[in-house]
Image (tube, rainbow, N blue to C red):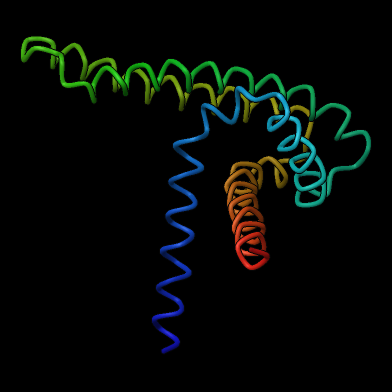
Length: 157
């Protein structure tokens, strides 16, 4: 019986994660939702990275800059993904599209590498090493928090 309960929870998390992923573009265009996420992100990152006031003063403008560039990249990446998924490219376009996919992967990696170097200039290396993992943890935190609210809302009905 316990394994069925665990499977149900895992499936629920996967469904929520995929639904949040799919809604990500719409959600990030909503200023109210962006503000709510930002209000959650700052204390979460500050606590997890154990940022001093001086580190936070230097880190947050740089991180905001990184996020803006990352969102612009993700917009381009979604457009490429839509183009690929539409299936409208001809067989002769496949090599060109393949090169675009490789270029997108390289571009995202270069952006992360560039900003890790910039973060290294304002944070101790130990905190820089934690940063990308904290980003993943923050996404999981938002999913769990959203699941808790959804389960609470469903119980109220």
